[in-house]
Image (tube, rainbow, N blue to C red; front, side):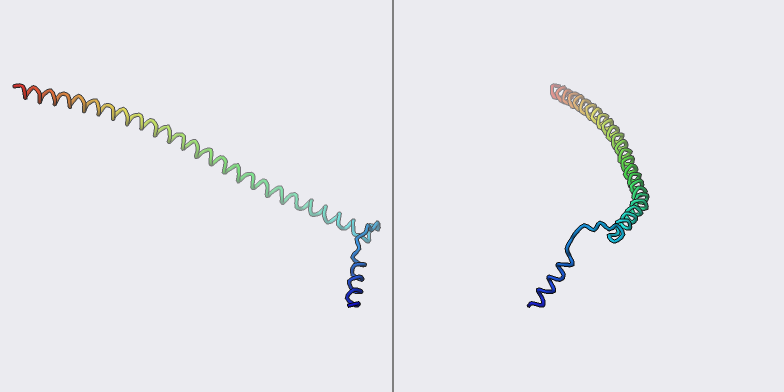
Length: 113
């Protein structure tokens, strides 16, 4: 058990976190160059990807607006056809009522003779 405790104490002594002011030993320059390179090279790829995505979204929006206009046109045409059908129905009803009155009058006249 003592060996285990000594091993853990040895590891914990090496794992201590502290500030290292030596620039070359802590690799601050290397890390800065690496991050700068990633940002420089990655920004163009990210920008291109975002531009493509924006174009796709704009295309989808335009397509949706076109479909909306087509749907509005079809709705207006359907409403016009409905109005015409209602006029035809009213005309048929009026003609049917007139015909029914004429037939009724004819039957009553024939019955009175």
